[in-house]
Each structure stands twice: as C-alpha cells, then as structure tokens.
Image (cartoon, rainbow over all chains, first blue to last red):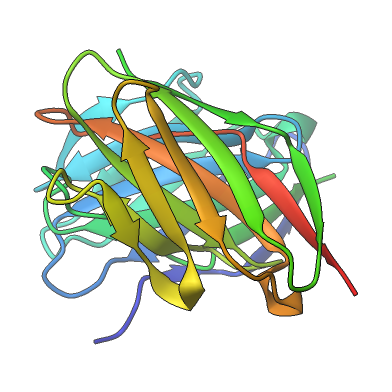
Length: 114
Length: 113
C-alpha cells in the first residue's frame, strides 16, 4: 500500500502570496489531518477532515483553510503569507480518526516565506 | 480536555545505554496513547500505541512503553541505544470518543559514541 504523499515537498514564496498544499492519504483512509511544525511551537494541529467535512479545527487564523475531496485527497491553503508561516506542514491520514486508529504521516511540505 | 507533557526537550545517552523518554498525559476520558519518531526531513513514524489491551506495549526497533494510570504516564524505553535511534520523539494522546490528537513538544534524542 502506498503511503501518504504530499506535494510539493519544498516551496518558496514571498510575503503576501498564497499557497496550496496537497495531500493524498493512504487508500481507504477517510480522515485527513494537517499540522504545522516549527522549531519553536512544535506540532500544532490545523484541522481535520472526514468525508469532505471539517470535523476539527485548531487555533489558527482564517488565512489557513482546507478542503477534502470525494476521493479523500485534501488540500490546504494559506493566503496572505507571513514570514511566520515558514514551517514544515505535515499531513496525516487514518481510517476514520476514531478509536485506536493511528495516524500515518506524509513526509511534509517545507514552506519558506521570504 | 487532553494534554501531553514531555519532560526534557533534549536527552543524551551513550550507545548501549538505556533510553528513557518521559511522557505524562492528562485526559478526562480513557486515552489512547501513541509514540512517534521523526528523523530529519521526514514525517512522523508510529513506534507504538496503547489501546488498553495491555499496559506494556512493545513497538518497533526494540522500543516499548508502559501505561501507568496511577502516574498518568506513558514513558518510552529501550534497553540499549543504537546510533540509529538519534531522532526526535513525540508522545501523543487522544481521548476515546474524540477525533483530535494532541502531541507533546517532542524530545530530541542524541546517542553518543
């Protein structure tokens, strides 16, 4: 079974631009979560999608948004980029995000904002 | 509400020595607990998980963790450190009936030759 894939792996943007990151979950997984990882803040939960619906949301500004498609693939969008948005963005999928279903992580997208 | 505390952001051990990484949790409902490892420039990989079937959980790469309800702890151990164990380790908790995973701040393990 293929693992979680994220594209692109690396991205460089300038302040004020917007960016879209993509995540393809493991086949059969319906829950997709996004995390922001930075050296100072660690892993911070952005949001979780299940069956095209946002089921959980972290404490991030509205510039961060996401969506999930019928095939469970997910995208996240960050608008009006700020320097502080530079981070590793991780996507994780699980069967349904319930019970003891663990999350499987992708390799991440490294976003650098200049 | 759930929370996780990892004591020690950096831990150094000698090759062959015992590895002990600490994790304490707070959960209002019986928790599911996980340990993940992250190697440089990679995503997180599951080491082991506690699902209430057994308090001592064995994972990959020789790691194990013991769930102690009275101490609200889920410490990760390995009897003998190997150079390849150098990585960052994350403890995570999720309460039954909830969908949100809460991760600790991570412990970076350094293995000295």
